[in-house]
Image 1 (cartoon, protein in one colour):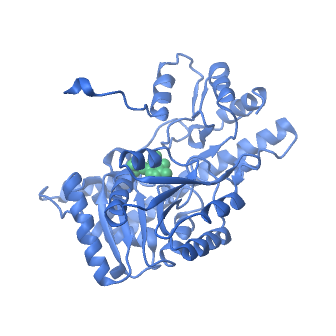
Image 2 (cartoon, rainbow, N blue to C red):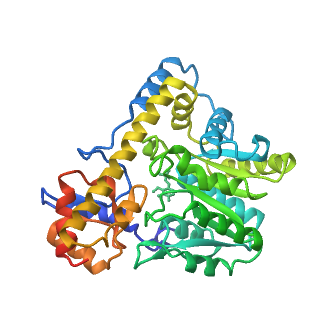
Length: 394
Ligand code: PMP
């Protein structure tokens, strides 16, 4: 049987991680994989997470199954964190999922059940796992322009022109904040225009929000998602807790479906629980319980928010330092986009050949599309990167 297998496409980010590990240079800089790192290169367990885990271990009396949709308290706190009061609770169906990826997978499976002929529209570029899963599920997809390689901002005219081609019932996938891989984001006004166009076309929005709290703060980063949730009868929201709670390996995420009314909510909830049952039955609970414990306890929540703010401000400071350093070295403001981008990533906007040169000559690792993980830098490596960028002729 197994002789019939053929090799699957390699994940280029994971392949880059392996090349980095094998590089003997001691001054190498890893700007590859999308994991937050502090100034010493560690991905710490957040203090509030440690405390929540301590409490869970002390107090937990059973590890019997939760519900198929996960713990309802987790859904409640996450709905509040992501959606605020943009939609009434009785219109939201939700399932806990293994990470944001699990939420995306379940969202796509729900779309396939409800609208098998719908095309899913993706930004060009987007997180590579989006097209990969869609292709694997045999669904239709199309791209809308998103990144302007000249300004390194959003190609808004291109985006609107492409979304004009969306058919009724198609699904448009949007990043809630901190666009991966570019770091370029829509303004509030631009999102209003996109919402207006999607409403006119009868499109269904699907928001992937994996970095809430990494851009402009918890509330500001949720603005676009809330704007969308309050503007449509139906929309899907896949949220990840991997980054903002630093619980990557615990696989914690949620899929929320905004429905028309309470009847549709009940039907959708039943379908979502069914999908969990088919794929893995009960979703993982530990990370979800950590998140619930933190969000429900005011003191713990305040501690988490403070640490997340520190993380966010650290990344903003690195962005500013890099933009300033490049301004000094090039005597121009053409790298100012680095300070305007938000989240963990920025797309430098250079060729794979230059990216390879940065790796070979300077030991600087970034994804071949020139996505850099800003959190992979520290105050000492920023000038090293800036000099390398200039030397490589970006
Ligand atoms: N969406 C985007 C845009 C991401 O960058 C990621 C993480 N790389 C995810 C979703 C999912 O993350 P996870 O499954 O680890 O929660």
